[in-house]
Length: 111
Length: 113
Image (cartoon, rainbow over all chains, first blue to last red; front, top):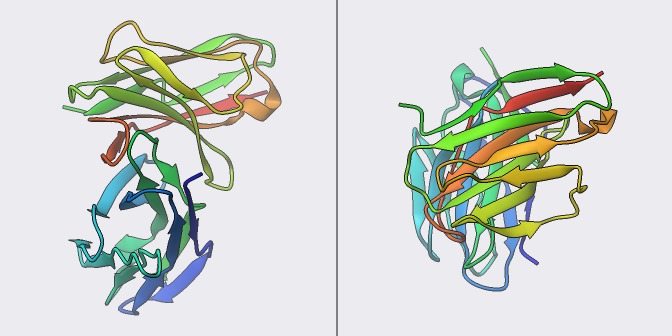
């Protein structure tokens, strides 16, 4: 069945550092791919998405590119802020199947 | 307006009790879900409902039962609560099952003592 594997972390960075959180997937069809963010005490919020190969999703300085050849959707940000501290989830959803999430990666950004 | 709202936000109860968590979405979505998030933040899908029809039930004990009075609501009933049921439960909805983004509620932190 469909599955997502992401770097579990935790990841600790200094402010303005470069961020990469790796995500790879397994799916029988052509899924849509997502990154969600969960701030402390809150629900999950959609950060960005991509629906087909080579699409790049972007939002709030975060980017991820749908790479079919490597079945990956790595999350990147050029300069993180303290306010980016949260748990990040990679997810996929394919036709007639429910969304599947990775294990989540906790990011802590220190001033 | 909150897109997906669930109540209560916190629920503390004793073992053996029966409890319910309510969920409502005002997005006009056709599919609703319940997820369980454990202490390590791992998310596990419990149920999904599409047009009032249960689609999946992934190895969830039958003490858990979803009830959908209409397309906008999906409540979660839990009977005979156990210590291991302590977790955060999230309701979510999406326009369709598959390929569409999901919108999440704020979560209900259930603590069984």
